[in-house]
Image (cartoon, rainbow, N blue to C red; front, side, top):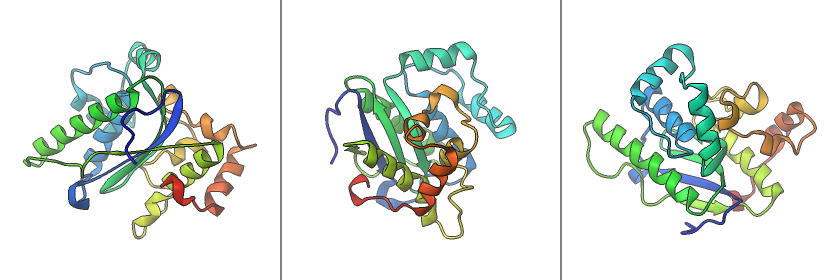
Length: 213
């Protein structure tokens, strides 16, 4: 259920779907824009020209954010992003709630920004997301580990897609190089495993428990 006041210093599974379950990420540009919001809206820092950063990413696979800006985001953030998967009509995140109302502030910023972007780009009006987002409290480390399995294997829902090569999840940041530095915290999960290879095998062989979905 949606929790009005998520507890501080706890982990949560966040989920939202497109209105009427329709696709809301229609091309690579939409995915990149939403990824920008997920990463850089963890604090209240403002960006004057997001479009420029997104265009830079298309060319260089980097958002070209200054070191000082990145350090300020990390210092001031009210949530910590643990993992993510952005699907055609919904998304899943695991976040750490760093302060009171941190999750609500984060989700308001992300969903409001994407709604404005989407409606402007596609000349639409009204709701982009179907109702309020869901926030499920993660009770223990085991549930946190199985949640990462569910999130990272979610692309299997798309016919012909391999979750290991799906570009819009944090799986590669776990098993290869973390592209986002301190903006993403895979060590929260990986520190429970002896090696990255052990985590990779865990993902392949595990089935997510129902209570994390």
